[in-house]
Image (cartoon, rainbow over all chains, first blue to last red; front, side):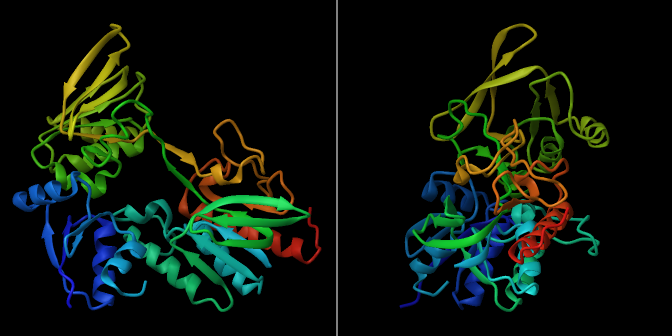
Length: 80
Length: 308
């Protein structure tokens, strides 16, 4: 079963880029919302994560704040 | 048993890793991640040999350079929690429960952001309390924010916020701006900025999200409140030394005291370099150079060579 992955990011956020690079290297498809420009996505992110930091990563409904490679790899079922 | 364990993956750790591998020292490098504090910098323009590079690219280059060395072992995504010496062997334990032994240790664990230690700071962390203006400024579009601290980092945070925030307060505890005069003159011209001097921040207010802050106006002795959506805290750094306990001597800023010729600490077998040490200037290039000095001295030490 394919993972449903959404990342809320800003263009300047380094850990967002790391996360996206990690997805690409592991052939993980993802939807990206730039919360610096998209106000409704920003609200959705705050609603899901109860905070304002990026990245927020939603993997099949499980919400992660920040990019912790180990946790994300585990949730995706890929190796680090 | 390793000959050397390097603790940290910033410019100092990476430089040490490359030199240790090339000296064929049996080395393990333990780091949470590579790159150090410049990781989040959008543009580093003083890494010698490179006119301009993002912090992320610099981190990737450092990691790649270390990983390309033959013989070096790397544990990343983990943090050292304790270093204990017995019979001139160092035992190192990590957060993930791993343990390693080594003849020598190079501490290049850097520093982290100083916190205010006031009510609301922890509770509202990530909920309007922010630590990286470069990263998070775009999240405060049309909002009112405060930057606490008027060192270079504080002034640069103000500058990063101008394109997004509708109003920026710069809150400074003393009556002097510590940051560069050039940067200060530049930001002072922006009508979005309001500067509050002699203000000691007492509390960050808010329930689910930041709604304001309370400060003591040292001139009038009055407590005052500001309505805010965000607070950026830029009050300097503290060295990452907790995992060492009393193993090495530190100065009044909790920085590890080193002999600046060799980078040796007060504890035989332990060296330190970079921002965790009592080096006067905290710079990527200096950290790399000092760590290299340390590795060359460690190489001598392991070979029983004493140099004065």
